[in-house]
Image (cartoon, rainbow, N blue to C red):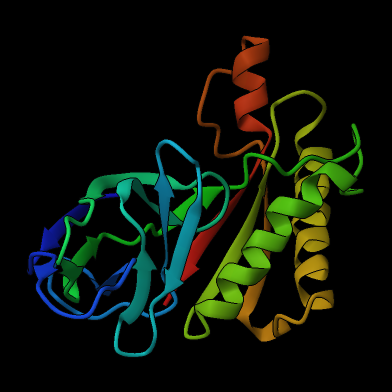
Length: 221
């Protein structure tokens, strides 16, 4: 994910004392089109305190941060992507924070792999350890109401091609069923089984086979 950060205003003014800096954040793509439903996290490096916001229809949200140094992360599904850092300076006597503005530019991912989604061996039963990541996908789709997705199931080359295609289709169907059960409209989701036809690594090694056994999400605008 390509990202860029702009800090547009400084933090200090002399007025009534306020212990947190108010940060107005605007999220756009690299053509300055506003992006709604983007989750931005601020993680304080020392205390690990976390603050976050979700951009509205105008690409905006407001977050209040106490003094500290923060890692800024962009959250979608799976691990949050490191974006940048920002430091909120400590106040001196007689100082207070002034509202600051920040612009976050993001190149939205068009596809991603559900790395923490697993099935029982040779089956399409989703393991309970996968629910957390699938629930993140539910939240992502709930925030991004204007997109549809394709769930693509993929296997390694073990077994015959027809069986692999059938297994991958049933696994994609199982993911779709989970999302629909959680409230995502079925019309927003297509499920496609690709079997062993689209490997991303060599099937000659165990490591390669593990990479090929995957479920991908493709964004359809």
